[in-house]
Amino acid sequence: MIPRPARAVLFFFLGALLHGALRTAAFAVDLRHRSVSGSGQFVVYCDDRDARGRIVSFVEDVKGQLLRVLHDRDEWKIPIVISIEPEGEPSSVSSTLVNTVAGPKVDVVVRLGDDPAKILFQRHIVHVLLLEIAYRDRPPLRGGEHFALPPWWLTEGLLQDMRAHAGMRDPDIFKSIVNTEKLPSFEKLLTQPPLQLDTAAGAVDRASAFALTTALLNMSAGPANLGRFLRAWPDGSRDPLTLLARHFPMLGDSPQSLAKWWTLQLAQLGKSETLRGLSAAEADAELAALLAFDITSGKPPVSQHYVLADFEKYIKLPGARPALRLAQVKISMLSSRAHVLYRPILKEYEELCGLLASGKTSGVADRIARAERFRASALQRSEMIADYLNWYEATQTPGSTGQFDRYLRAVEDRDAKKRQPAAPVDPRIAEYLDALEQEFAPLRPNMLPGDEPTGSARR
Image (cartoon, rainbow, N blue to C red; front, side, top):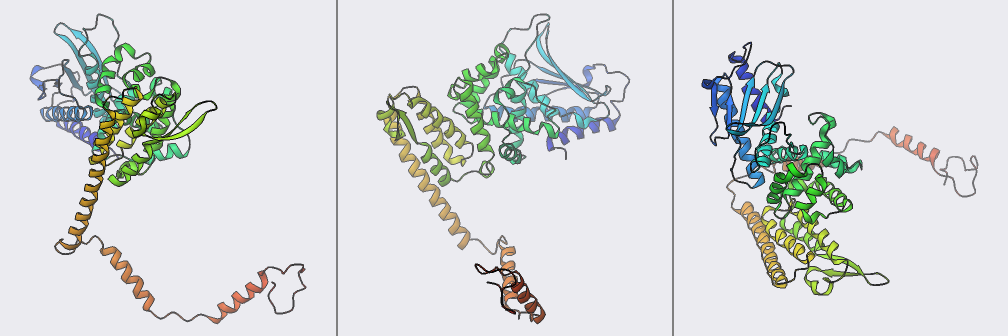
């Protein structure tokens, strides 16, 4: 089944083919056959006016979704020129960053070929938008200078995140990854190209890219840090692990800490609660467990239990910093599953863990006290809201909602069957069961087969 965004692109590509305007022997740029998008960033060349209008609308829609995910404003500087070419085998899309007399631009050439369905236009638009963000504040490329393409996992992860917001998210792939214990390597994910993403074999790569991007976005200041990471990518693409740790310091700077964080993230996404979302009470229970941790200190090493508010007792212990960093990461991961109204509370505790991990204690006690009061108030209010909604549904809903009709009919059918007289039992069945019982009954202790009395069961 073709995803909804891909179907939209397929429709206007097929529409262009049906109109016949693209069935020319050669493609020549004609200024009369171009359209400029509303933001002015996209310039689309296509002979078919209807298809050109749909493309302009589609790319602006993709851009708007991407900016919402990144929490960014539309401050583009490099135009993106899209040319639709009917000829070319096979169907393909190519993009490149070039420098012109008027300044840099991104060229996108779409060759429809005979199978436009193979062109996943949404992915390519996300790709060139990230390319523009990475190079918009840099000097123009010199002649022959190469440019660094955006990391594939970031393009794919943001694309999957956008689809998830449209309700096209499936947790089964995460469950299968965790259950088979074939966790993809974090270093391999960042440094090696993926398999063909649109095949069954590429499902793990798609899911891994989505998991990584979602985890980074859900961290404190995640969208802003991800934007800085992207702008620094042209200089740091040769060492993505170091670049990622630099812009997301809470992940740690060692391969072991990154691998541990990555494993925890995949495990969390494998849970069914990831999709349905935790209630405020469920999120609060998990938060309470994360705000208490064990810290080992002394010689011989002794493990002691602390809560976050007791930071004056453990802040100077050697094991305090890694324990607080781990709690910070876990709270960030919990935020991705918690109810949206509970996330400000989790963000506050995540920032508190970060401050204490950095050794900053000024004003932390007051912030913890305020957070505790707000947390208790929010939990109480959520319970009151749930009680009110239950009361309203039970007493104020006009007429029957029909939501329980199937259940009520099933109960009625079961009760009706119970009231029916039982069918008479065939006496031959009882005789057969008695014979089986005698034949297969266990022997009594110290009895050999054949010693049992005639006509009696073996005990």
